[in-house]
Amino acid sequence: MSEKFLHSDEGAGVVAPVKEYVNVMCVQYRGDEFNGWQRQLDQPTVQGHLEAALSQVAAHPIRVTAAGRTDAGVHATGQIVSFKTTAFRPLSAWLKGVNSLTPKSIQVAWVRQAAANFHPRYGATARRYNYVYYDENRFNPFIDGLAWCTDGLDQDAMHRAAQWLVGEHDFTTFRAAGCQSVSPKRRVNRCEVRRQGHFVVLEIEASAFLLHMVRNIASALRDVGTGSPTSSVRDLMLLKDRVRLGATAPPQGLYLTHVSYPGADFPPAPLVPLLSTLV
Image 1 (tube, rainbow, N blue to C red):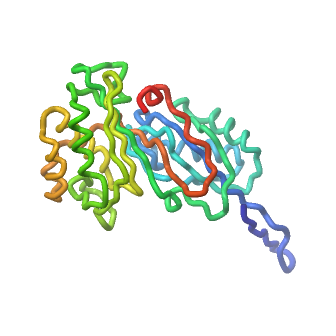
Image 2 (cartoon, rainbow, N blue to C red; image 1 turned 90 degrees about the vertical axis):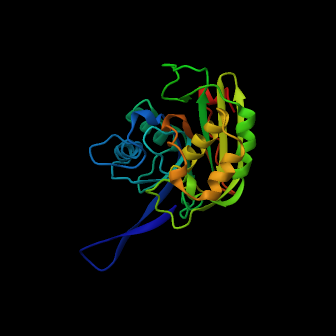
Image 3 (spheres, helix red, strand yellow; image 1 turned 120 degrees about the vertical axis):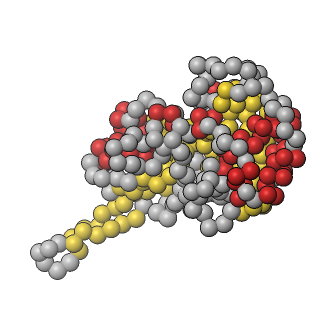
């Protein structure tokens, strides 16, 4: 919480301090109903809906900042969002108010007050994504939109291949052509693949990711799962050539599940029904 001051046009000085609050929210959403996170003119986005709802609750315009911008079709179970406001509301009022004013596919899990210098993007030390495959060898209309329906996968081979990605590497092969990051180097803390029934789950954690990096990794690992050698992931990384990689994995299998902030006493993000059976 910080203080600003209102100045009077009549007279000589400060009228009264105005308190400014910094609040943090954990937001969960189904990305297949939105054109991505970032606010866009005449397009439904998660940021746009949240800002409209928060502005109505606060009775003044509000802009939000997120830990990361997700693409169209990508989901989040643990997106962290902050906003500043001069309107005092109980935390429960922000929670209930926003949830009543946003589509059912966007829900705030919790709201907390934070320090004035809190920043959800620059203060984060790690981000975790899950990519979910469904490998029953058929398209499933009840799974489509929540996972990549694909042929049968060898999850053990995928897990072995994923270990080539752990550590600091040049991920040029796995970055999208439109990526604006200055450096293609990133440090992956861990990368695991496991099976639960007909679902195969990739879990990857890093301090930051390049544009489409996780979806491109998911594509390369899917190739391993369907017959490519485990060393192909290492070979692709060493080539540093996006052209040598196949098509980017579809967005519906990707979930932003966790963002780490050292010393922050934030509650864990609630698991959604599908992921709660897989992680």
